Image 1 (cartoon, rainbow, N blue to C red):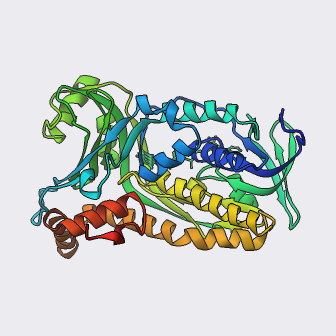
Image 2 (cartoon, protein in one colour):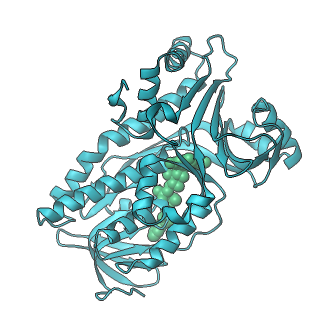
Image 3 (cartoon, helix red, strand yellow):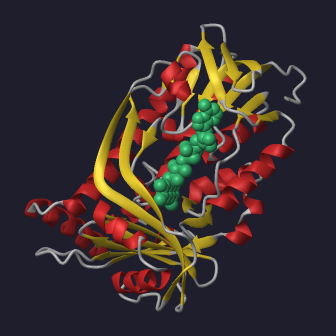
Amino acid sequence: MPKNKTPDSFDVAVVGGGPAGRIAALTCAHAGYATVLLAPPAPKADGRTTALWEKSIELLQSLGVWDKLEDRSAPLRKMRMVDDTDRLIRAPEVIFDCSEIGLDCFGFNIINDDLNSALEERCAEIDTLTVVPSSLARAEFSDREARLETETGDRFSARLVIAADGRNSLVRDLAGIEVKRWQYPQVAVVLNLEHSLPHRDISTEFHSPTGPFTLVPLPGRRASLVCVETEQGASRLVSMTDEDLAVELERRAHSVLGKFKVISKPQKFPLSGMTAKRLVGERVALIAETAHVFPPIGAQGLNLSMRDISDLAAVLASAKVRQQDIGSQPVLQHYENKRKSDVRERTNAVDVLNRSLLTDFLPVQFARSTGMYLAGRFGPFRRFLMREGLAPKTGIRFPR
Ligand SMILES: Cc1cc2nc3c(=O)[nH]c(=O)nc-3n(C[C@H](O)[C@H](O)[C@H](O)COP(=O)(O)OP(=O)(O)OC[C@H]3O[C@@H](n4cnc5c(N)ncnc54)[C@H](O)[C@@H]3O)c2cc1C
């Protein structure tokens, strides 16, 4: 049960104990808000990895989480993009190097289980944060407060509810916020590998006709793979023996990392997209996958979610200065105004990049190849793309 001195009344209730929910809860608790996190235990281990960029790492540092992860994460210093489409119009290879934009690394690749356990550990250390390990069952929202009830019968009220309960969010439904959903004809096959050659902190993305095939460094001679395939192609890959799969993947990687050994069970993730039509409802702010879902291309998903959290924290801080109610409509409107263009632009950029690989339409292939050619040839454009890839509106600083 809650350890807060007013156990049934909180400033903020965060619903969902995935990475976004835990980071949001830590952020609010660090800002001094009495916070409750509803986090049912995760059903299974998550061997996937997440690449987090500079600003996301800074947020983890400020929350006291990064110290627990640094030794277990791999820095990403270069990103190589290779057109492997075999189409009439092919783009030249491009290498993005973090030193060109004055960084020691773009970010780090982290195993999700490590990230989740570091966040869980940190959540247990903060006095202003109460973690309730059960699911939300019901909620009511009024202009005065939100009232929540868990599946185990615990009841709370909060001035603000942060919905982080994932793509099928109950909070979002109860708040009456509609969504737009769409599907892609692709499935991501995800697994981790050992390889015989060093990766030298370089992540390599082959653009294949079914989607990206991306190898991202892990500590040592290990890498995580996201291979975007057709449904049929993905089923074929996951039905192979580990030995045959290793040979097939090495062939697709053109042996850039030498021989492969599969070290985790391949998992399939059908690609889909979703955006919420509003980012706020009465006493409710949507963050992360309750608000936006898109394919795992360019490592954008959780990084975008962490910008939701940083912006929400900034909005709450300014509400505090103005002595406003943190769950009131003007404060929530401020949050929505601050977030909507970043969410829309990232969702569209990932969608366009993905569809440009699938199409046989020559003008689109030409546009994509030209973009990669310009990125390879022109430093200012390349640096602009690097900065925009890490965070929006930071790319406009060129030339250096
Ligand atoms: C293959 C793959 C690779 C990816 N790689 C990257 C990457 O490199 N970089 C990047 O930035 N992003 C990446 N992403 C995206 C990233 O993984 C997601 O954005 C992130 O995991 C979503 O976290 P979340 O907390 O929003 O949602 P979730 O992890 O889905 O968490 C939602 C939580 O809510 C809980 N919940 C559900 N219902 C209730 C309820 N009623 N009450 C209470 N709790 C509830 C669930 O138990 C769950 O714990 C990748 C995604 C995939 C699929």
